[in-house]
Every structure is written in structure tokens, then in C-alpha cells.
Length: 261
Ligand code: 9MG
Image (cartoon, rainbow, N blue to C red; front, side, top):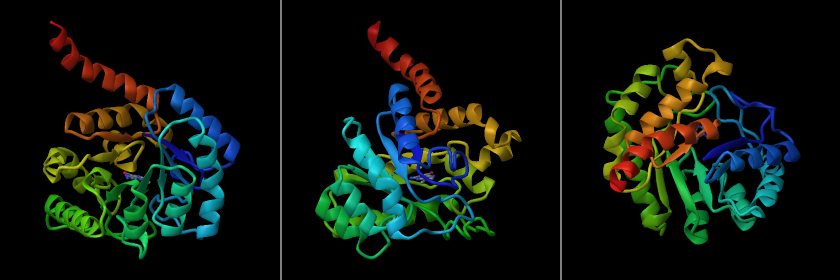
């Protein structure tokens, strides 16, 4: 899953692809690099970011969604607002990436009625305050029980099993120790029986590990994505599509080459 941020303030590429034209150009590049799906976001969710209005978000994402749907690549939109979900699905998006796990009133209904795929992500707090002293007694059991509850609520609302994806939410109200514990135990989330999406690309936890600044985290991002894939993640949300695809090709080759023999 290639990331397209149509935002002036995202943590890694904020402002770089803020116009419709540059976002579409960037998307075409990621398709060439081998992205299987694109995630379009109009509102930054980095720590400390401020929410924007529904109108502003629609203004940013809708033209990009319309432009890309014509190219035939599956489009996901990163949003928590039911009105935005409704409009982008109508425009052809097939997936909603909701960091708020459909907790906004009306969100469950939009997904249930539309049949779109949805990613339910865990976070503690909200982007503007989530990195202020996050606390867990046991991060694995707390994230698991939240995701299990949201899956149950989604099913009760009529959302089908095939529509559901989960995500432990790296960096969303988590310290390094919590993120590392999640990465170590990532395979435990497979027991929920739905595909897992993971986003680690260029996140600040990689700076804490490597001491590399934001413009020098590509190697760590690829290593983290590969680790997540080896632990069973099915969708990797990344900025560096080509580099990640190459790493995955090496990983996948050991399975396919043993079958050939
Ligand atoms: C929007 N966004 C930023 N980071 C993310 C992550 O780790 N997962 C998902 N699902 N969305 C994310």
C-alpha cells in the first residue's frame, strides 16, 4: 500500500504532494514501482496535528481519488469522517483506512451499506495528544481486546468478515517499548482471523532505534516492513514502494524456489 499524503503537514512528506496534480504524479510513480493499492490521506495524523473540516478534507482528497480511480488501481482513503467516507466510496474508493476504527457516529453505517473494505486501527488518545505519556499495563492484551471489540461492533452493524482488516497502530499513543512489544508479538494478532495492515514507514520509533533523522530512515523502514511481513502482515503501508517490494521479493523467493525444486 503506497502512501499519498495530500496534506501540507504530514510528518514525512507534508507539503510535497499537496496539489492534486503533484499527488497524482506521485501516485503514478508508486504504481510504476509496484504498489498494489494506494492510500490517499487529506488530514495529517502525525503526533500534534490539528483536525481539519470535512469540506477541507473533501477538497483535498476527492479530486485525487477521481483522478486515480480511472487508472484502475484499488484506492483506499485514510479518513475517520463518515461524510468523507461516503463521498470517496461514491467516487470509486474501495477501502477506508480509519485510524479511529469506525467510532465516529455514522461511520459503521457507511461501511455496512457500501460494502467497502475497512481497516480498524488501534490508537490511545488522539493525534493532538496521543504521545503525551501513553500508558499500558499490557500493550498486547489491551490492543487485542480493543480490536476484538471493534470487530464485534462492526459485525453487529452488518459489516461482513471479508470487509475487515485490523491494525495495531504503531506510534499512535505508544512509546518505543510499546511499539517494540507490538512488533515482537505481531503474529498474535493473526488469531483474530482477518488480514493485518501495518504502518511503520519512516516513523519516529525508527529514529529512536537507529538515531537517523526523518530524511534517512528508508533502510530501517524496509527492515521493519520485512519483519512485519514475516510476522504475517498482509498489507504494508509504505512510502518507499520499490525498496519494500525488492525486500519482499527476496523473502518470497525462498517459498517459491523450494516449490520449484
Ligand atoms: C494514516 N496512518 C498513519 N500511520 C498509519 C498506520 O500505522 N496505520 C494505518 N492504518 N494508518 C496510518
